[in-house]
Image 1 (cartoon, rainbow, N blue to C red):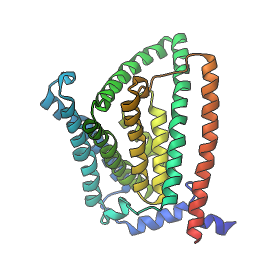
Image 2: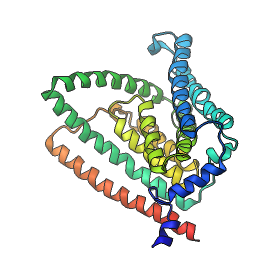
Image 3: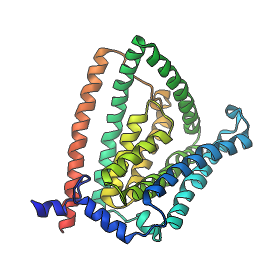
Image 4: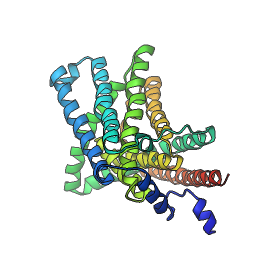
Length: 322
């Protein structure tokens, strides 16, 4: 049993602390890895949200609705590259001697890819179903509490702004425009955000704290970074799955692929179906009957997802033995 534990790359394996200490000895840093992680969080947030936002206002003015949509798309893409991807690489170079050990890019095999892709295929409808339940109860509570109703009104305003901005970026009327949307919404964010969050930030946390906590903290900050009030928990769960994939597989290529597939699916569904409901995060179950259906779906998919995670962990455990 002890031998099995020593070989098992369990996400919460107590022996992870030994591996974590070994990694800490191999990777030299100029400052505390915890401080480095927060530099990435604060630096990336400030640069992208404030500096990038200020540049957009300077270029397009305060009435962004009248700005050319392709101009906004290019500005969004440039912001991702200049203020998220580039700082992550620069921070890694300045703080750590070996960037390759921080930004891990091992080529995964097909079995790994398929297992994790099946996971995102299960997790996406699971989280959408959860949203229907969450928002149903928020509406119920808002009817019985003035303070919750006030908070909900604020969330609705913020969510409407997020949905409108995202909807404008997704809207495409031709194949060339669709390809640009895929590049801006799916490809660049997947690479930039994963290198910053699961690469530099989570990896820095991993050098000092348990991988489970490192992935959880990174996922929470990843969710907050997106300014989506109703999607806070689903985004955190999604980010945690990306973090689990990054740590378990020891490569960023898998979470980059998962992130891309998640965004790409939204782009294609919006392009094919053209429904605003696809990108809204404030949708809810309409009745108690609908609530029961979504509860059953959520529980069923959660059980299947947990079984898949167990299968992934077993796969890596066996892979270490061979």
